[in-house]
Amino acid sequence: MKTENQKAWFFVLPVLVLVAFNALIPMMTVVNYSVQETFGDNVFFWQGLDWFEQILRSDRFHAALGRQFLFTFLILIIEVPLGIIIALSMPRKGFWVPVCLVTMALPMLIPWNVVGAMWNIFTLPDIGLLGYFLNHVLGITYDMTQNPLAAWVTIVTMDVWHWTSLVVLLSYAGLVSIPDAYYQAAKIDGASNWAVFRFIQLPKMKTVLTIAILLRFMDSFNIYTEPFVLTGGGPGNSTTLLSIDLVKIALGQFDLGPAAAMSLIYFAITLLVSWLFYTLMTKDDLN
Amino acid sequence: MQKRSIIPIVYILFLMLPIYWLVAMSFKTTNEILSGFSLFPQTFTLENYVTIFTDPSWYWGYINSIIYVSINTVISVAVALPAAYAFSRYRFLGDKQLFFWLLTNRMAPAAVFALPFFQLYSAVGIFDTHLAVALAHCLFNIPLAVWILEGFMGGIPKELDETAYVDGYSFPRFFGTIFIPSIKAGVGVAAFFCFMFSWVELLLAKTLTAVAAKPIAATMTKTASSAGYELGLLAAAGTLTIIPGAIVIWFVRNYIAKGFAMGRV
Image (cartoon, rainbow over all chains, first blue to last red; front, top):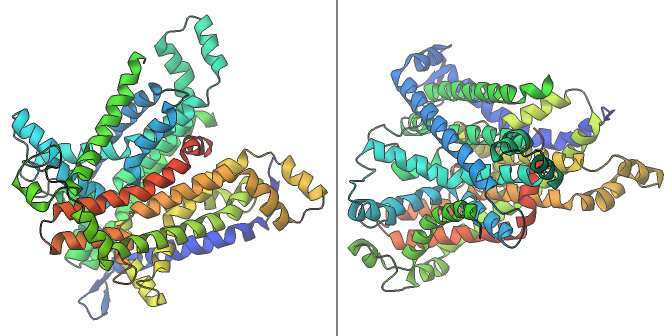
């Protein structure tokens, strides 16, 4: 049982100061921009909530938000089951365990722009390994700079390549924490593989899977660098995800007001969905 | 070999293919790359690597990245240790709210903060220093470090603290000589994740630097656009960015899975 101690605040203080410095001041700047209009030279006019209304009604925002949800939905529906399957079939002990863990974690440690550049080189139609294979060996016309579908398949495949290992590592951590006695008991009861998965392995993986799904949701919803380097949002606007669109407005057109309003709406959506995920997945524990 | 081990093997092959291609490209001349497809380098060359190791604007990119990543890792873990201790041992006013607020900072898209960060760090006068990037990365690394460390500390029974106090240890002495050594796996895992997320992040690092502290990732994008189509050089630079991560991961390989499992939700 934890003891009540208000002096614990002193232990938390350094963290609070550093994070607040980085989080609150920039956030206030964004809020400040979101209610003002500027014509440059640091002259600002009060704008009220006009920017928010404008963003919420704009087709461009709706389209980018739709693409963002589609992207996040696709990668969650692929990465989570795939990660569980791979974790289930990994060896539990022996020489191959560290080999698997290290090689699988490798993609996560590559800087994000290098990931984008790497996939760009990999998929070039005539000189990339994948591009050459598809175009000249299988005879499928594949060029992600021309075809929106090819661009989508490429960014989703890239994300699966980049982040499935996170789900694998987390699920694996949950699996190795199951005592052997559970499996022996299941064997005596004559439980099927499915029953072992459903009633022993899945419940044990639940907490780590919650972390995995939350982290994958947050990070994929905020993804910027990799698709930006790979497709630049194209062809056309077909892969312009929410944060790519945001940076276009903020730094490309320098429309600070609308960009700030959009940032706040974006942040609010991320918070809301994360909170929904979190409550849904931890609901059973509370009852 | 069991039949089901085919799944991890296929998965690892899938992971290695793009990496192989990057490495293969880095040993090719630009001419060979552009002239057509070849599975292995035909005219094996180290020229791309020589360029990187002899040109200061290239190799300083690596040094800059390693400096700010190290500063960030040290700061994040150092301030997260006492905070995680407080969260795992005590109840205090607003503790749950504070914990959740810390985690929400991982949800803010870096793209949102790029411009305000630039203004903030310019105003404080540390724009284009390693410290600026290291401090900015604290935004998402400190919450993560607190989260991981709190999980590890929760696994240490409270009796350890009480016994030490009965034996006459002061808090700093107990914390430094008994408590931290008993969670050193957790410190390793937390440091690993701070290293990882600081190493791979580009947007903030690029926004907060101009010349003096420019990260390798920014050097790459700049050179890629100014030198035209030097794919070989780009591939060599990319290959070199994989190495620090690979070294670090080898050291913590036995703790990674555990570190995740012990974190709480």
